[in-house]
Image (cartoon, rainbow, N blue to C red; front, side, top):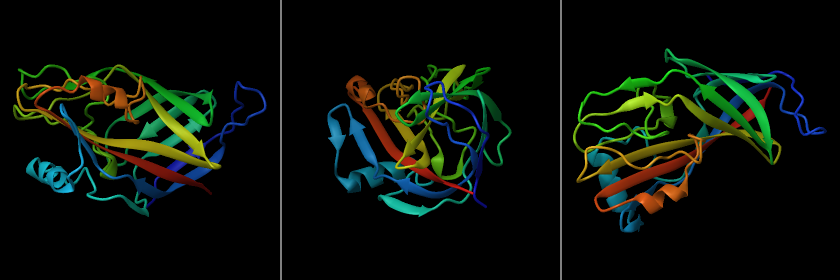
Length: 227
C-alpha cells in the first residue's frame, strides 16, 4: 500500500503563491547511485563500494545502482496550516512539526521534541545531527551510522528540519541513506545534515573527513501524486 500524504489548504506568506493542498500518495522513488568518500577523496571503484557495503551488512540500506521503482509505503505526512504530522509505518513514533514555506518551491517542516538516546556502547561519543535513525527504520529510506568499535549509537536530536520540494509541479520528498565508520576512532564525526536539514546531504561535511574515515551516501527522491 502506498503511503498517503494529506495536505490541507494553507496560504503562503509570500502572497500570491499557494502552498500545496489536497491528498497525495507516494507513487515512485528515484534512487541515485551510491557515493563513497574517504579522507583521501571520493572512491569511484564500484567493486570497492560494494565490498564495503557487504562487509558491514548494509545491503538493506543501499541499492548497488541507480534505479527508479514504484513506491511501496514509506512515510505518511499530514500538512495543515502551520502544522505537520510525520508518521513512519509500523514504528511507534509520530512527530508533530511546524510547517512553512521558505520560497523556491521548498517547504520546511521543523520538529522540536525530546532527545531519544540509545547508547549500547558507553564508550561512544554522541553522534551529530542526521547521523542515525536506526531505531526507526523506514523501508528503503533508512539512515544508519556504523562505528567500527562495534554496536550502534541511535538517537533523534532535539530539533531538526525536514524538507519537501516542488519540482516541475510535482511535490517530492528527498531522503538520504547514510553510513559512516572510522578505522581508528569509536565514534562518528561527520554530520549528514544540510545545515539543519537532516534528509538532504551536505557536501560540506566532506572537508571534515580524516584518515580512516569512510562515508557512504545515497540520495533518494519520493515523487508524490495528487489524488
